[in-house]
Image (cartoon, rainbow, N blue to C red; front, side, top):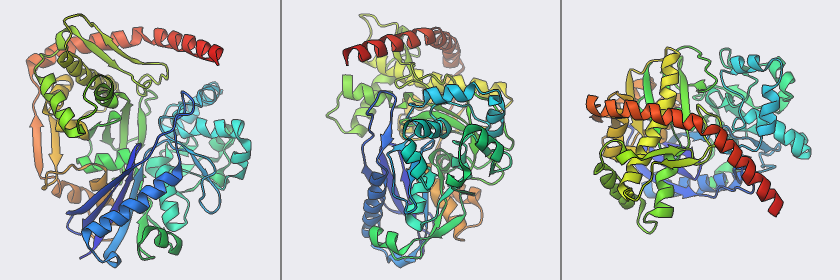
Length: 512
């Protein structure tokens, strides 16, 4: 029997799984780490904590599985996107990793957007120029910490760093490369002219490759640290959203994954490059396919509610089950309460760092259940806001597939079906487990090492349990009107969000 290790490096934890060659999960483990916010717009992680988490979780699943480590056929890795990590020639980090939540480079993004040829960069890369992307972060580092910039041997993404630690090879797969605006999306290469225009030295960027490429084998050094035999093949890996889309069942054109977790959004598979600067565009892990994506930040609002206004002392599963039951008791519309879920600014389609969360319509009659229902509806409205943009670009959804922790709430799934006015499908493994990142990584790695020859067939065969939430015409009619109100309200508040941010910054500086 052969086995595969999958390593999913997320925003708050690394999750590692051990699979057998039939696609059965043998063991799983997770290790958390801290996100540091030394300044209001900063969001960084010590990359060594990623590596420590990988070593700990790999050791744990191999021990739990009771297997011969020499039977591991391959290792697959994914990681969070838009991450800038400068390393030296030995792959030692020279600074903390700036992750997708980091927006410190707003001034650099504004300068890039002011360039006479900025539109060419957007069309080349098929993505907007925003502070969350890698490009402005590179320029921030170049301007603010030139000694680190100059000393850098290579700038790596999150998954690229783990692959490099495992093999010693500096690579960037196509699904992660869109964070750089010198990446030519259609031609799958670094663009020399764009790099010169931006001020990015190409000799400091990693080699581009497909996510299923075996970039090397487990080195002697890494093997000693991780507790595995040297020589195990390691694939380049990919963006977590791309492996998550695959693991949710997005294998064919038009299929769409809606991610319901710390970050929300969707990924629609298509076969052509679409430039819509309000949305996100990347390669899919399936050959010949791309992903038109939306990324929202409201998914963590229920966790915030639990910690601040809820029952922080209860286990997550128990408290979220309670939340779902309470929200179900309230009729659509949450008794006139609307929630704007911009708890940490908003990404698509607003790209606004100042935006904040709002409960609109509070009264003395408002209940805890009303607030929970409004949070669920508001997060669905945020995704719907992006879905309308995609439809305006002629991008249709053939099947809506849900993934992530939110799919454990039948109430939330039904809300999404009613808001989107589309059947909402939750597919799970035979053992009841989720698909998601690990399953997508398993399929990619299995193809790369020759255990299977078709990514789509592999994934679909491992997601036999399907539950379909059908939309209600009556509830959708209510949500159609409420979404129009939500959208208008969110736009009217943008200037107020910016003004409040200016006041807050002014007084914060004054008190310091």
